[in-house]
Length: 311
Image 1: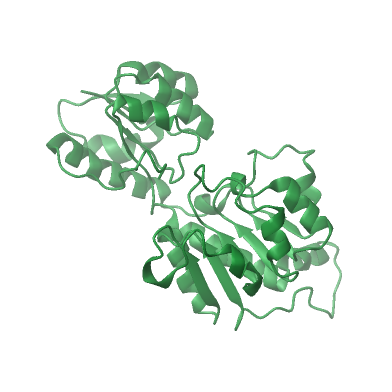
Image 2: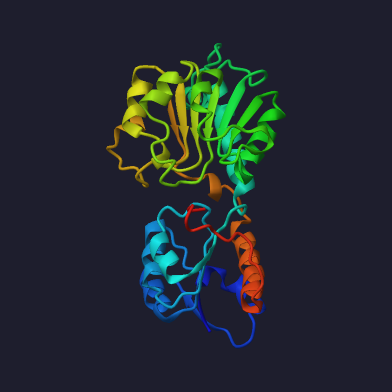
């Protein structure tokens, strides 16, 4: 049995790999594409998710694909489903870091810390705080109240924020997908934390932004394609909403000339939320090894993706 694994993770994986497993360690995009062709197991995550999807599509003999990513929007899910490939994702690996980033986004927006930094860069001393919103007694809607969404909610509640979640099932008192839109005008913070699927693409458009409070902020730590960006730029320019904290956009990287860079009251963080930690690779390696043991023994694995649903 052959596995293609990242050379960067070799020190974490190699001492614990079972005897008899043939391993190819890839160090770049071309190596991943070449090595995966006859592999049974692949962990071929690369800097650009599209490269990862390209490599996976070449693996016609693959039985299991492991990925550090939680969102699989750049993976060839139809191909993997047709081939009967098991896919396990990285849900939970970055959950704490992403949740902290989302809360940071709310705090930065409330206190307009982005403007505070710019004032300091100009060596000016201001007597007026750019942002004067207290989180206490504000309300947040978290669309996607899974692992990350629940962590965000718990942290916001500690600040006195009233949190409402959205899930597919409506579990634990959350709203269902057909219930949250009529309530948009109730919230000060609309936070996107759902997986990217066909059902979530452009879910925040002109109508949704028109329904939000003029004082409300959009916080996106999910995927950029969940927001109609032309409608967002228009809403920001017309001051229909107060602002947007965007960890994710579409496309990524955002071209330097893209108008979203200069849209009013927009804070960009270049999809750094999951990278704002030091333990990502250690957690990913531990999860891979645990799943490898289960895979070889024919036991149930962790984080198995529903390829029909996309997460």
